Length: 220
Length: 344
Image (cartoon, rainbow over all chains, first blue to last red; front, side, top):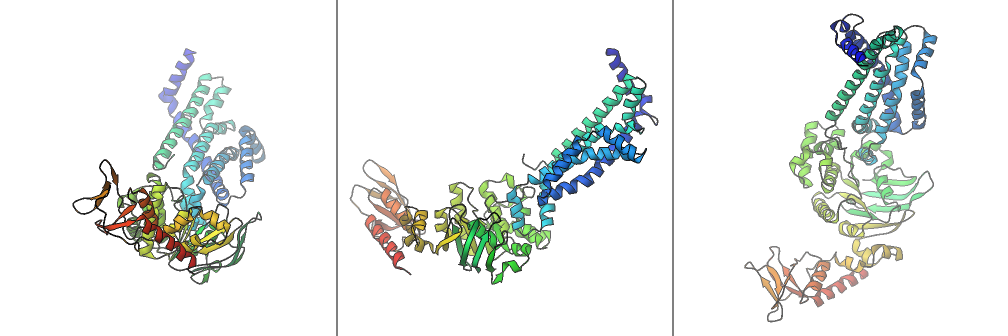
């Protein structure tokens, strides 16, 4: 056991391991690229959807159920399915990651919108704001903390799951896990896993710190 | 200024909120809508700025049918204050107040300058402008709500239980402020409350509603108190409505005479001739001197508490002008009632 951790330590810290096209730095950049792009696409889908449902109060039942359906989808199964349908490309990976991220974004955006004090919305309308003004000047800014929580959760989930890119022969930190498994190299598997976990934790801390800074004027 | 003509409001679930309402709210006056909850008073108020649409009938503001106007523009021309103030928690107090001027397209600088002016109007310190609503007390938030409603200088102000959520002391202060503001600004105010005392205090006319959205009586406060239309109104006004009427009459006409000398109790004055207390050989009872504009109710209260049955009368500077007896106060209280009953 001790030996294993010692080897893991030297694997993670050796200079050679960090450089080159299959070095940690490059794999990390790939991993972040997949994760950010997938989260951005999910945001482009989930954010307008959540805002629309929250603002109009219509379609909530359908959207929330679709979202939990999306959440229940097994990601690897989805990758294989889309892979079989579309052939070898990054498409199956992005489809699965987006499907994973959208529910967290929609539900949190919707929750943020419904948590806005009805009196405040009433006052906004009563002062003469039009629908879009109420949405963008009042509801959206007030829902923003929860919306950001949704984005953060989505990103963390995506980062943790982006290892599947390697499953269909692409890069990212998952490379170490799948290669390690194939080569029965436990140190490499663990190294990949530790890196993925570390990236997720660091992003989570950084984003929640940013949230606290941005919303320091808000009560509870 | 605001006319309801055969207005009916039925909600989709079948309940009638307002039943065949015809009511005139005169320009420059405070119309108070009272009644227990679910009587349609808030719905009536909200139909004026189209937050609720009438099922039938017409509502005119300044002669124009509200349903023929763009709802958002109509609302910008009418001040609106609600119970929990409804301030925007993510905007500073100043920006909250500047809401309507900004919606009307006035520049940011001009809107902020106007907002700063209004802070003073509603009795808030200038540095409150930079704060966020949650950093203010309930009473202060409500003042900001009033300032926000006044920002574009609308001729009409709708106030939906604006002081309902603050403690009684602050509530009295806010009522005083509103009366003071109204003297200056002369707005047409529609005020919803379920508090009879508040209605009597603020209203030029009071409209009493009964469950089901029926208007039972609309009259001046003294007419209402002296001649309630039916048992419902009488019950709603409460058992002390006789005393409430006295809160509307001033002490000015009650005769006064010189303070008595040589009795068991002497009225002690300070060096500026201001009353301090009643003194006997072994006790001192504080005096609350009354001015001409104080109410008969206050006089009655003070005379009951006074050991001699006399109240101390003072001028605007607080200097003793004389005393009035309990009997004279009673006589005037009786006359006030008779007059209110007989007056048409």
